[in-house]
Image (cartoon, rainbow over all chains, first blue to last red; front, side):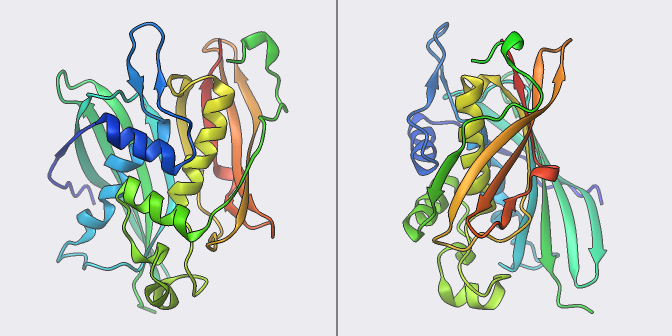
Length: 134
Length: 139
């Protein structure tokens, strides 16, 4: 509980936003009229949160396995994610409980603007692991 | 973008419908970095999938819910939060309907809370509206 993983950085690139938008059927990243900034679709956050789950759990302590299911996901957007952002992301386990043959883990990832440490996205996901235990 | 005066509790956003074939799942895996073979390898899926077959990424369905909400909201900067519970597995090839309904309004913050969902033609609640929400800033 409260276990933290090493922080990582993620740089939001225009091509990655374009690729994500195409894969989820979005016509193209939004551009704000005021400042000409390109804003990512909200769930682009998956690329720097859920997309890291496999790497995070390739952990000898917890065992590397594919037999996990994503139970739920929540994002709070403190501000939109923009092309050019460099995000400093810190994952930590905030809850872990056994439910019969399953372990349910809640992983929070705080994503801050690496330039000024202001919050950008808070991600909270639950992962269900099949332990095989009775 | 919907203005405060136009939005009422009970109002529904325009629904989207999409068939999630294997090519969608592969494109999503590459775009998002979620390379779990549960979403593309039938042998792995036979071992670990709750259905015994390939299932779509929960996050692909959440992304498609988000697309419907973002379109209604008038832009990604209007979407303040999103929460999705992936209740039922979504087999590859499913045709999924994405929707949302205003369930709460906050006059002070000028926000609308929507219950959101994704459902297959068989009625499987792949994103369950009872515990899936979006909060949108109104104009």
